[in-house]
Image (cartoon, rainbow, N blue to C red; front, side):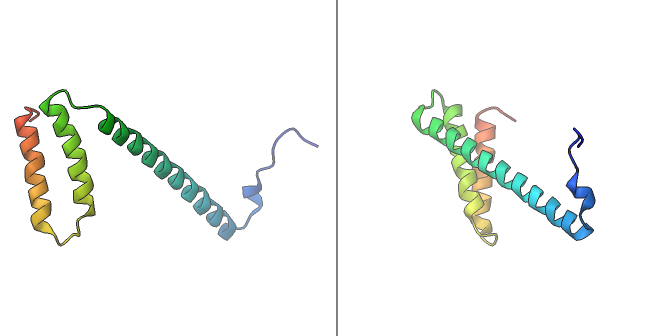
Length: 98
């Protein structure tokens, strides 16, 4: 018996190795997506429970909400997409960020 672990990937065929790599990559992507959803939920909870102390802070909350709205728009809804983009540009201009 040896103290070194056996690398089973070396004993698999190419198709099995590719399938294993895909499963590992998918598990990693799912873990990152779950972490992102948890972080987004935490951020949104903080946004709901902490009132904005200034207009720029309120604009940050509005930006987040507008980005969520814009992501849900169908690709062919260019009018609403342009309206969201114009409003986000206004936030940047009025908050002195540009």
